[in-house]
Image (cartoon, rainbow, N blue to C red; front, side, top):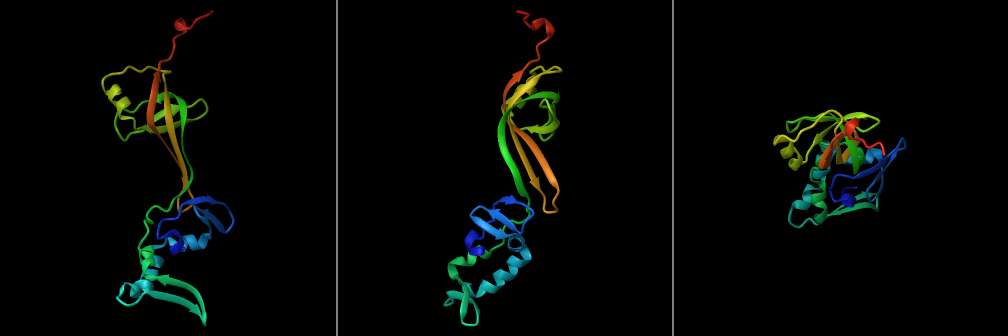
Length: 188
């Protein structure tokens, strides 16, 4: 797996209750993926291939009797360097879509989440659109029932301990849609 992924963190595309995990370029046993991302295991493997850093040693073979199970060459050594395993989360959903959201509570401070209603669920999301936040700072008026037409980025993942977590951000506010009062509605 070290050579196959060239030392990179695996991109897990699907996990179910089986023992196999679909990764970007094939499948791997879930215990293999767990060991691959474990810093202690990677460190031990790095020490095993360390002789390849020396002049004159170009090949390390793993054998069972006369049968070569695997061969590691000098150019494979970087694959055994530590992978960034501080974030061992598994993305289940990561997408951006257009949405219209009714404003429940608008946060005016960067890093603080606003509250929205999408017609079915109330949720929090941080607005990342700097241009929109500048308009708010300049005093763009809002009132109860106003909506925002946005690009909504949603991400859902499972932590290493199996906890399901979701997060929403708004990278772009396309339009501020003011609520129409009853007298503005046409009865034609």
